[in-house]
Image 1 (cartoon, rainbow, N blue to C red):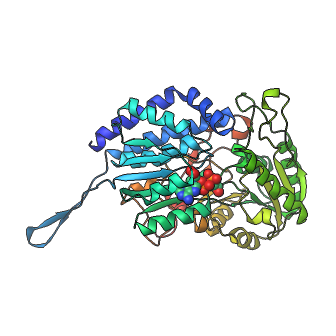
Image 2: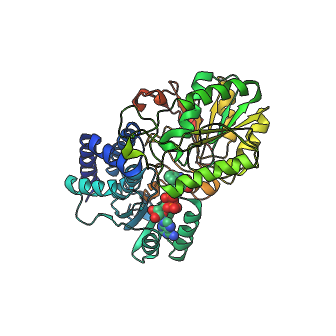
Image 3: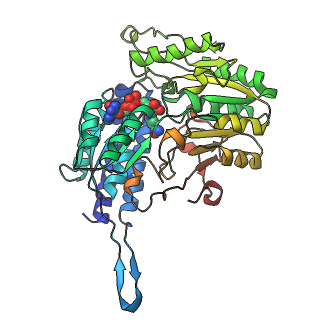
Length: 455
Ligand SMILES: NC(=O)C1=CN([C@@H]2O[C@H](COP(=O)(O)OP(=O)(O)OC[C@H]3O[C@@H](n4cnc5c(N)ncnc54)[C@H](O)[C@@H]3O)[C@@H](O)[C@H]2O)C=CC1
């Protein structure tokens, strides 16, 4: 198909997703355990992603290069072939769209393997693609776990791998890809810093900290789980964060007013609670939560619910501060100076995201420029519009130009050795946690301010 033809099919898929938003969101809530309120946002981001790449499909073009003596050369944009997408369980439908959107826009085929913990919603995506006119066999779902993932990565007919998941699995994928000299895009874990200066709008900073820690039960790779608070406001900030955290409504994720659903499974719940136990042993103080939550509703009593946890008295060398917990656990750390906090914020093997809350715009841009992180937020956190890059530094994986999988857009890829970083600045304060739709945020991006590095 030509780019325009691919565009039309993808726009139709986006339309169907929009039309079936409620049904798919409900399916995603059952699939993952996150609140229906959040699942709807995921579905919106998913159709927006397909629309965005549909828009690019028609404009992909080669170049004509004039040579001496009247000769000329030209480049063609050609699909890679069969791309493999391997997804994590926290954003099943969205990850599948982030990977298949760019792949299909560029004329590739995709074999997608969801996490075995969240197998269903991506099957609905495959049905929608078929309904929209994607030729049979162009988007395929293969269910399975590690062995299936390995088989796909090692398959000689696979041209490219796009992976979202943990750092250890990412390493294995990179090794397998290296053996086949296959390009790979990795979207891995994080332990991102959130820096609250004493001049910040306190109300907004507190909401930002909740957004940075408790969306999707804390199972979000770019969460700002190391919350550095300027010592002057430590007590006030901590008190307010604890108060708001205790008010988060936990329970049946299909209810409209629920803001925190169930964790993905029992072993993961045990693992998260293990981190909290270890944090206490190492001297941290549990300021709230961390215990199991048992809903009154009998049919939910065996669910994997826990109360969101805030840890005080944390030190940089504690396990809860160093390792990704991937659950609703916030660690608060005091700091005194800008120089000190930047150094501590960067002292991590990860580099996915970072956030700064301050009223001083120069300080905000200075600090985010110094953070070694792929995505930085100023006076906001965890908004990810499809138009912006998503990816990390260091062990958080390769940074690509837009959403995971984008490297299928060859040529738009960041040149080797360069790094991109994107910064989001809000026109409105963080309100999503109060129940407003993310549409109420207007995200401003000024390219000159936001891109750094050779890109
Ligand atoms: N940077 C990002 O964009 C995101 C990162 N994550 C990270 O993912 C992790 C949680 O997700 P999990 O599903 O537990 O990660 P995981 O790494 O265990 O699994 C991810 C996917 O890889 C597959 N897999 C496992 N072993 C494999 C192997 N040897 N070869 C090929 N495929 C294999 C799994 O079946 C699953 O589909 C967290 O560490 C989180 O930070 C999650 C979401 C987004």
